Amino acid sequence: MPQKFERKPLLAPKPIDYLRISLVDRCNFQCVYCMPEGADLQYALKEHWLTHDEILRLLREVFIPVGFTRFRLTGGEPLLRPGVVELVAAIAALPQTQDLAMTTNGFLLTELAEPLYKAGLNRINISLDSLDEETFKAIVGGRGKSRWQDVWAGIQAAYKVGFSPLKLNVVVIPGVNDHEILDLAALSIDRDWHIRFIEFMPIGNDALFKHKGWIDSETIRGQIAERWGLETSNVTGNGPADVFQIPGAKGTLGFISQMSECFCDRCNRMRLSADGLLRPCLLNETGQIDLRTDLRAGVPLSELRERVAALRQAKPDINFKMRESGVTGAYSRTMSQIGG
Ligand code: SAM
Ligand code: SF4
Image: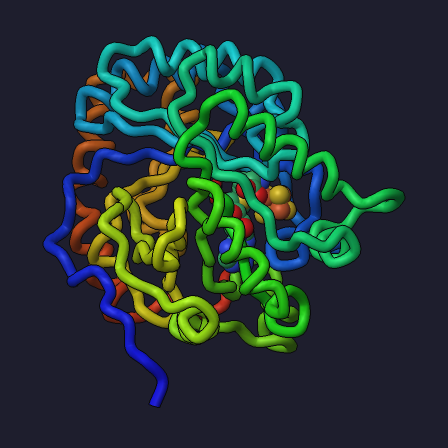
């Protein structure tokens, strides 16, 4: 009988104060689980991307007044956004910003880690699905040499400059990188890094999902526990991860189990796409607001505030419905398009 690990209890909904802002819907990688090569993705027109001024105006006049104080910049690949450091500095300088984080593939981080840190970025999550150059290449795509070395150098640069805890995101795919679960988990033993195993979702590459299937967090925890033992960590994040630790390790292990153990009831985040669509949930567009069109059409900011406040208020109910229906269906838009 496999060991069962204690997860976070199901909680009353938290205040919805966390906005993920996609800076660009394109990417310099084509991860097999997210943006497979040959996929016919409809990118937003660049002139439809919210400008820096529009993002800042929306934060100052709409999102902050209705209660959002924590922001994560994502994409696509957020480091592809021209002027990203200046934008980080401007958001960090807003007096109400309590937390400013970023999720990146790390490819451009060697140069940008220090300026981002100095600009006021508080936290960074870097995707790293493999420690093996060939496997990495098979996952992220691209012709020519593997980009693993660049990403690894970016991770080191972020660590050196002071991002702490440094979080690494891993999507485990059977037959692709599941043989590296222990090697990736071991990164948390000697370093205060937080390795987060994210269950593969049928969003982005449904064919791969059907072909390979997915591995649940409990199985991953079981493998790690068998090797080193595993205990619940005192560190609890703000997000949906269940946090554990290899006994005596400096760092921690997080498990994001949206497939096996729906956490919609705990979800406190909303998402703004690069072209200005605000949605209440990664997988649900109920009540979506086209802020770009409204802003550019001159709709008063007071009216946008009211609409965003109403959607925020409706979210617990949307969360509840998502929990009831489950998240295991297939989705036509990728996380890179929505803002992962
Ligand atoms: N490009 C950045 C990166 O890769 O970190 C940020 C955007 S990416 C869409 C954000 C996160 O979504 C990454 O950690 C990625 O692994 C995850 N992701 C993308 N597609 C996924 C899928 N089908 N299932 C689970 N996680 C996925
Ligand atoms: Fe790009 Fe991130 Fe998607 Fe990979 S997971 S294709 S790096 S957006």
